[in-house]
Image (cartoon, rainbow, N blue to C red):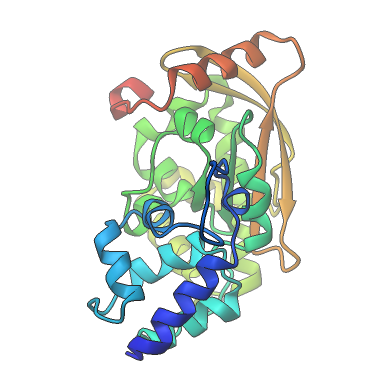
Length: 283
């Protein structure tokens, strides 16, 4: 771990950012350039004291999970992310289609979407980051670990995960998830995480096995969706996708028709704020 270089890198990346770059409202009387230390700490979910010690060359070695959070908070490119890992004394993460490091260009767009649900996913259907409104609709997945973070895995192994869609749309959603996984598997092969997921689901789910045998291939994100929220009911939205150049990640934006009932429900969710609901409420 190169403490002096790590501290300098963190400080310079922090000072290079503006509050608006990370979706924060600039406050008055900012005497220092860039983000404040407490703002970086809040964005990463660490204590202010922990982050301050890192910049003062006296903190403990950050975990890989903490480095991933710092990379997202500081809007690091993949090369900058890799440099951060090296400075902290960790091996650089492998680059693959299921990389959890969020593309900075997509993050900059997401930061500016405050009045519409939006989230960033990788090619395996794992939510990497979501704004407040998307979290209010789909639930908070930030604490999930392993395959439980994956939409396809949860859909075919946990029936309560389907509650966000009305029953009449379950078949269509299942086919869409499998066809997207088929595309990711075709691009990365049997030895990839996509291949591992396919093997697990073939063993655990008869429904998945039947759909997999259809050999349907498509990456469908642009779609008209009906979502179900336990507090406001059904919400009709259109989904649009913005992909990175390598197609590894996509920003999904859910918009309601102007002056529609769905638009009013999304506004209501913005007022209610994020609430946590048990899986039973989602069913």
